[in-house]
Every structure is written in structure tokens, then in C-alpha cells.
Length: 237
Length: 237
DNA sequence: CCCTCATAAATGTCAGACAATTGATCCCAC
DNA sequence: GTGGGATCAATTGTCTGACATTTATGAGGG
Image (cartoon, rainbow over the protein chains, first blue to last red):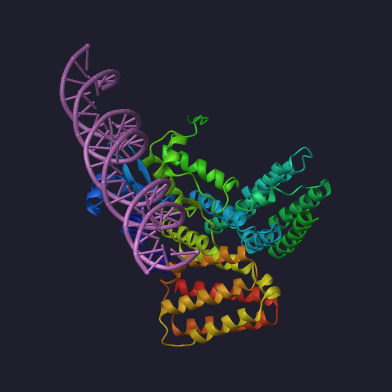
């Protein structure tokens, strides 16, 4: 477990140092979910710093969803049980930032997204439940509305693929993919779909739904390739 | 004079609210990389809060690598140019936390990791360069050393797969996968490889190297499936 | 039994001070 | 003119003490 924070002991803020110490305790399991940290006053005394500095350290941890705080008599800072949603939001924001700040082009982002999703479809074919089929059918119906704005079409597309990934029944997978898809959503939102583009996407979605229902993973893979090519044409055309 | 248009919107800390505002400006591009934020005093005046509160907000952003700070006359808080490495480290730590805190079992984590990687191999077959083949060959040689500790074997395995993913030539993909693989490394490190497990992994690696050199994506996919099954067997005993 | 109120403990916020850092500027010797 | 210090000003980092707010708990009275 290479801790990237333990590099040449750079001159760090006290608040960063203390945050690192507590983070270490959490990552190594010395503090587990729902454990309560000492109060700010106790922490400040224990680490020999002021309460303000302790607070800055705690805010750092809170920003990483490592802890949550509660006010009041039984309040304090508690080790957070990081939910998949929290992690997803965090990752999506990182992904967005990475893509916009590094000027990743839409083709690269699309390629990545479809490549990742392609890896899930066999699992999805194996583990899908009725609820996933229903969700996808619902989104396809929405996508057929010609009055749907590009942005809403995109959102529905995201929901469709989210259901597909969820069908794989692997929360880690769902989390990674959801973050990836959400992260490039800003880029996808810049696309303008002609009606014939939408029609092409929708028929592919319908074919995918059929393939998923019939549990034919290999066909899903082929359809994903088509969809990727279609999306790229829309993006570049 | 903070014209507060915050509706119910959950009762948030002031520091969280201010962090959100600044984060929004960064994510929407109103603040771009290397832009300098106003000084803490100016921010506190602008948002109508104390400097301590502003500082807590800035620490939150710093914890997410959104900004960096520098002391001194020309110092201040600057929008960070998030590098792929930073993002990767951040995501890996999130993934580790998610997996350990949620007690994700090793089978689920493995399944996710191999599913994601499987999606990249066709691209890798198409875009691989000599440098990637060399890196993988080097790691295979390391893995043949019988004196290698389990942990080092694991690290070499990570490097091997990292090279494979890099061969796809898509930085977004490399970033996502690297984070995923690193994130579950703590779990993988708990595995103990018998010699025959190592031998099986190594021959699969050699076959993958061949397939990559010959650019046969379909064969790579099959080999990935074998490798996943082999890893699961090792994990489950 | 229930309602109200006081209490204590904890986080949230504030104001002001001082320390440490660092680039810029000025001044002077050479 | 130029190099090298000394000084300065701006900014973040830290500390102190205070007060506000939230919240569980328990005491007291109806």
C-alpha cells in the first residue's frame, strides 16, 4: 500500500500534518466507521496545537468525506461510512475537473467511457434483473419524445446506461462507471443531436435491451461498438 | 453583503457553503488553472464571514487538490492544475476507503477490476507501442524470480497491467484503470500465492504479451477471463 | 405521565493578534 | 552601473479567547 503522502516529508502545514495522522488511523483501521474522534479541544491538546488548527484539519477530512460532524451534547466528529454515492460524486467532480482542465477532447473521453462500459456488458447479461430492463425501457420511451431537449436526451441516455451497468450487480463497477459517465457529461452535453442521430441511438438502445433480456453478452458488445461509433460520428460530424 | 439565495438547501456550514461557491466557479470554468483567488481577507469581506471561516473553506478545497496555497508577498490561493497523477492518487485513496469501509469482498473487487480492464484490451491491441511490450516483458521477468515476496509480486503484477492499459493510448482510460487497480491493491496484497498460482499467472501474462504483440484483441479478452478466474481461485483458496 | 426549562457539552463563528515566509524595493558600497 | 544586503509589505499560518448555536439529558412542576 504505497502511501503517496509519505514522500520526502515536505514542509507541511500543521493542519495538513494532523489531517494526515488521523487519515492514517482511518485507512489502517485503527479508527473504524462510526467511531467518534476526540473533541476538538481534546485533539488540540493531544497534538499540541490550537483548536483552530485542529478544525482546519477536520475540515480537510470532511472534504474527503472521511468524517462527518454533529453538533450538540452527543456531537463530535465521526468516521464516515463512505457511501457509494459520496464516492461517486467525488470521483465525478474529479473527472470533470481533469477533463476540462486538461482539455481532453471528446473523442478520447467517449472512447474511454465506451471501453469501460463494454467490459461490463457480459456481467450485465448474466446478472440482469427485471428492474433493470424496466428502467431501460422507460428511458427509451422518454428518448422517443421529439420535444426533448438535447440536455434531457443526454440525461436520459446517462440513466439508460446507468441501468445497464447496475445490471451487472457489482457495486464497485457501478460506482466506477457512474463516476466516469457523470464526469464526461459536461462534454456530452455539448453535443447537438440531429433527429436521425437520435433515431440511430434509440434503435441501438432497443437492440441492447433485447440482447440484455436474452442474456446475449456477445451481441451487447457488438452493439456497444456500434453505439460508440455512432456517438463519435455525432461528436465529430 | 452576501446576497444569499440559498433556499432550504440543507443546513450547511458557512465554510462548506463558501467552499461550494468557489468550487462551482472552478468547475464551471469561471476560475481556470493558475488563477489566483482573492486573499483570505478579501474573501472574508466579500462573503461577509470571518477569516477563520474562509480558511476552513480553503482547506476543504485544498484537500480536494482544487487549490494550492503559497505564503509570502506574491502568495495566495491558486487554482490547481490537476494532474492525472494527483487525480489518480485521490481516486485510489477513495477506492481503497470505499472497499475497506464497506467490506467489499475480494471477489467483487476482482470482478470489477477485470471487467474494466477487459474493455481496454481491444484498444490496447490496436494502439500498443514497442515501449509497452518492453515494459510488460520486463515485469514478466521479475515475476519469475522465486524469491519475490508476495507483495512485490503483486506490485509487479500491477505494473504489468498498468502497461497493458497504457497501451490503449487513452489517458482517461489509463487514469481510471490505474486508480481502480491501485484502489484494490490492499485487498490483492492479502493474497498469498502458491508457486503454482504464480506459474499460472505468469504463463497467462506471457500469452497476453504475445497476443498484444500480434494485436489479437479477441484472444486478449479470452486470456483476461482466464486470468480473472485464476485470480479468483487464488483468492478463494 | 408529560411538558417545560435549565444545564452541559460539543461544534460553529467571530475578532484580533502575532509569527513566518517571500517577492519587491531601496540604498549603499564598490 | 552593479551587486548585495537590509528593509518593507503582503499574505498565509497559528494562537487565544470569546460568544453563538445545537442537542441530549435530567430536574422540576403541573
